[in-house]
Length: 183
Image (cartoon, rainbow, N blue to C red; front, top):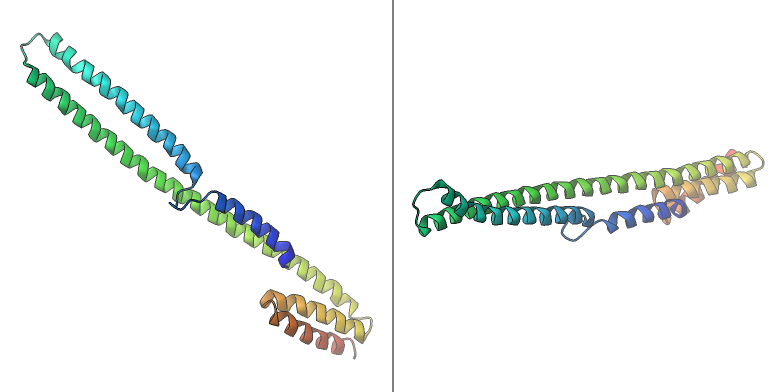
């Protein structure tokens, strides 16, 4: 059973481990949000430069008399408001990244669970087919019944507890197969 299910489980586990990081957010998610973070920083930097150029122009076109302190204060207030918006956008992006990371992690765990289940079901199916095939031989003679029972018992015992379960299953299966075949 392990020969059949272990390669499947190893394959799934290696794919899961490849997309995990110590920080808990998958590298693929970090890369996508890193690009978004860079885009947000660039957009706000562009907006900041445009805003700083617009304010003196707006004061000049208004036609009023303003001192440089008023223009400086307006620029500072605009820059602070823009920085506040930028920080809020980054916090939202951080939250979305964490949510996407958790979704990715859950998907990977589901993949691991379904891969493990498929591998174990496949191995169990082979063990069941083996048990049926060997059990069919037990009708020939008490010796074949003991062999078939021992093999079936070992397969079932291994599913319960490898090692001692295998030995106990083989012993009980062999005895049952021998007695069942008329021995």
